[in-house]
Structure formats: C-alpha cells, structure tokens
Amino acid sequence: MIDNLKNCNEIIKDSIPQISRRIILSASVTLFVPSVAIAVDRVSQKSTITKHVKTSTKQTVKSKAPAIVGRARPHVPVIILDPGHGGKDPGAVGYSGTYEKHVAYATAVELSKQLMRTGKYRVKLTRNSDKFVPLDGRVDFAQSNKANLFISMHADALNNHSIRGASVYTLSNHASDAQSAALASVENNADRYGGANVHVASPAVQKILASLVKLETKKESVAMARNIVSSFHSRVSLLQNPKRYAAFVVLKSINIPSILVEMGFMSNRVDEEALKRAAYRSLIASSMCQAIDRYFAIGGSVTHLTG
Image (cartoon, rainbow, N blue to C red; front, side, top):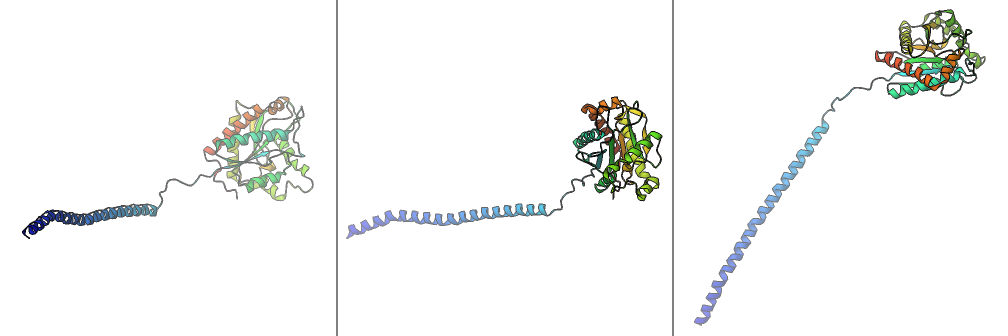
C-alpha cells in the first residue's frame, strides 16, 4: 500500500512539469494568435488607407481643369493656281507646235508641288487635266474655295516675235499699254470655245471692271505682283516694265488678290524652247514660290474676307 502511494506521487510529480509546459505553450499560442491577427489587420488597414489616398489623389488630379498648353491652329492660306486655257482651247501655239495650255498646266503642277512641300498652304488648281474651263468658272472656283490668293498662269503670243520675257499683270479697267490691252482682249475672248451659253462680260462684270475693284484687294494684288517680279530678276528673263495691268476678266474678283503671270511668249523661239524644258519651268515655279512665301510672311491676305 505504501509502495503504491509512492508510485502515485512519483507519477504525479513527473507529470506536473509536462502539464505545465503544455498549459504555458497553449497560453502563449493563445496570446500570439491575436497579436498576429492585430498586426495583419493593421497592415491591411494601412494598405487600404494607402490605396484610398492614391485613388483620391488620382480623382483630384482628374477633376482639375486642363492646363492651357497651346493656341488654336493658325489659318492656312488657300492658293488657287489657274493654268490658262485647256481642252478645246489650246491657247497660243509655238513655233515647234507647243501648246500654251500644256506649258501653263505643267508649270502650275510644279508650283503646286513646291508650295505643298513647304507645309504652309492649301493649293488647288482650277483644272487638274486638259479640259476647258470658262473664265467665270475659274473665278467662281476661287470664290467657292475661299481663296486668299489667285494666280493665273499663261504664255501667250504676240505679233512681234522678237519680244520675249516674263511679266505680271493686275486688274485695271485701263490697260497700262497697248500690248497689255491686246493681251487682255485675247484672253477675255477665250470663252468663245465654250459656245453660245458662255457670257464673259455681263453688265455686272463690266461694272466690277470699271469701278468696283476694292482698293485693299488691288493694293495686295500689286504687292504680290511686285514680289513675283522681284523674284524673277536675275533668274527669269523679264519684259521691260514687267509689272503691268489690264482688264483681264479672270482677275475680276473684288475680294481676292489676283494676278496673271505671263511666263514668256510662245511667239518667241527662245521663250518657247525654254518653257519646253522642265528645269526652266521648275526655276519659274521656285521663283514664284519664294515670292508667295515673302508675301504671306508679312501678312498677305490671310485675313481677307472671301465670302
């Protein structure tokens, strides 16, 4: 009996440390788990707060008014190039059979390419093929496209075959000289190829030619003509007194600066041969391109009302 009691005491004595350790470990775990949970919860809360702050910042940035970083695009001038004649109207015919209509068109196309390469202009041609276009139709085309500049391109013929060289014309109801008057008469008669339905000089047109040319438009036309002549100097052969004027119907727009460029005369062998060469036509085009750049660099007719 006594031995049994001793054995029981020893078993209880040995068991107590094990039971204590288990209780302590269990208690520690119980205490640790809430701590971890609290720590995880705090991290989660911090992450949520950070995301909320970022989202709020983004929303704040988005809600701000956009900054003004530039201005509206500037107006791009519209230039209308008018290759003279076309279709059943060949224009002047040179010694070797060269047609004015082909020379005018080829030069206008080259000038259009050079102008477009600058990126400064919108360029349109009154005809894009060998077709007949009435004089009034050319003017209407410029009006409908709200042109800032109209340039008609020609290479006419004279009875005096020794005369050669380029010249530039602006509109006037009185010609600067007999030669200019004769050229205007020939050009204004081009609509005879259009048949009976084409009327060149209505009373309204005559009135425009006589008295309704706006002074501002006329001044700008003269300025453009002066620029062309200046660019041609030392590069392209010029007539004496190359800046001229006459009553050309194709220049009748009262609100679009308009000029007519005679690149030379098909009635002169030297001029005809020169105008047949692509290199010479390119030289004429580059000279005109420089003149147009200079014209618009100082304002030109960008603000012109073309209604």
